[in-house]
View (cartoon, rainbow, N blue to C red):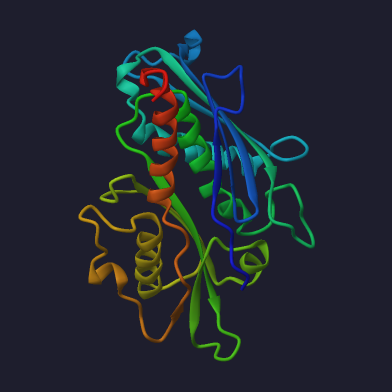
Length: 267
């Protein structure tokens, strides 16, 4: 399997949004905008907290059921990390434009390939989080996500391997596909979406692999032995980039830019 380049993020590329970000990784490129808190329409008002509205736009054409499902999943996840109770009767809107997806022999722009609907979810979530950070919308934590697929080994069909950030080709032959989202501290599983059939032992392996990608270093800087445990009957792929470290570096870069005005001339 070819090596996947590191993720790339650009903060605040859009001038007319409160916050925005462009995120590219594993063949996906997403541009996100975040606006809020703004006044919500009366029918959307919640007297206790802000309403989170997510719009997912495909690379071409009009969104369909797949995009509506992604919007619902993202709204529920972001509702958990945004301090929505600080802004009652307000609206926080996030628009996610899919610019490109991994090339596929059959589908290039729509999310109707089995597994591809889940495969784009981490890119959408990371784009949304980066846009919220760019907009300085208060959050109790950030979130990191990873997609994984359980594939049969060609040499021995009784054994499987776990592939992170799977491609559409991987999804087409996968026994199951998964997306897991963890809080920024790595102490809470915010979302687990799966398609296909799998055993509890396979789920434990998927969870361990996801933790190594999303929560590298853990709270104390080390990954525990339980997080590293993999069934010897299976072959696990190498973990992807440290997503916690990637988000941390993006936040650090934003803060450095925000406080440049404090530096005295000539320093």
